[in-house]
Figure (cartoon, rainbow, N blue to C red):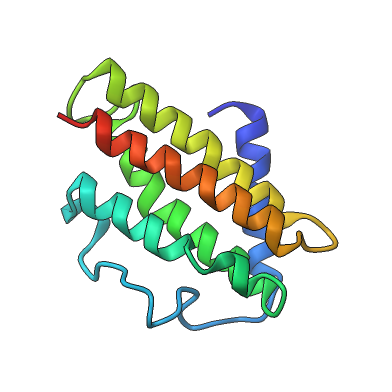
Length: 146
């Protein structure tokens, strides 16, 4: 993991942990799969990410810490699982197209985390743009899947 990526993740994690403690950082009404990430297929993991970030632009103004926690949770439990299994050094599928799409989606996820870690918190328009870019990257992952 490149140093910038590691630093971004650490900053996002520390920022998220510094907010109000929540028992479940992902709101209950978000459709996240209840199975362990290792048991989920690629389409479900991508769907969890896309669904989980969809309302961030509306949430960031009133609950920036919660928005950060949601993104870190999805990154750690979903995006990292995708990278572990289908990324460039993934354990499943060795498609170069899929690996490249996963790597690009990872970069887009990091950008969203950087925006949400900003002080003062990013405005909803900036978050909406980053969410749209991430969503497109996740769609590319699905399109590249065999």
